[in-house]
Length: 155
Image 1 (tube, rainbow, N blue to C red):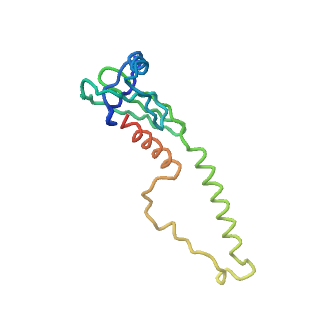
Image 2 (tube, rainbow, N blue to C red):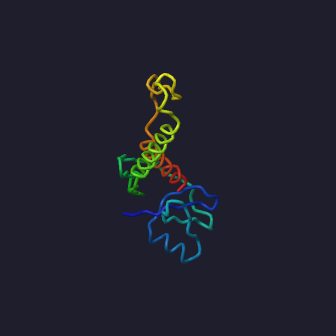
Image 3 (spheres, rainbow, N blue to C red):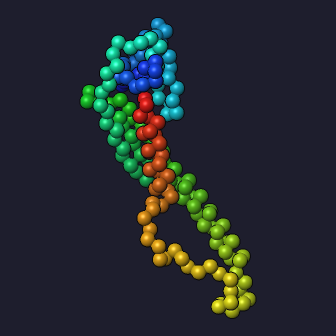
């Protein structure tokens, strides 16, 4: 059963409600539509709520390479299911273009008419470093998932 997130007049999250009740609140002027970056239909109460209790929610992330799933679940119902299209292909294209341009710059800098030991070239430095960072494409995917979760927490 689908649930609608409810926000208090002070901007704090409350217990989710049924869509029919949310529509009734909107019709009677007790609530207004709450705008958010995820385009999730949520209502913000204008009148004071009868209770301020909240429930524990669990966020589940199904990470993937091209698509990811995010789900928010309470003990009674699934509140939110999102399907994310990840930026992996775009990031890899941009990184490839960067690599091509960088190699072209390095090629212009070297004078090949000189003997090898007199050429102006940058010595290799990347082989002797410990790599503890994520590749940019995977990092962009994980940052998008975290950004969606952070935006969804106040709702």
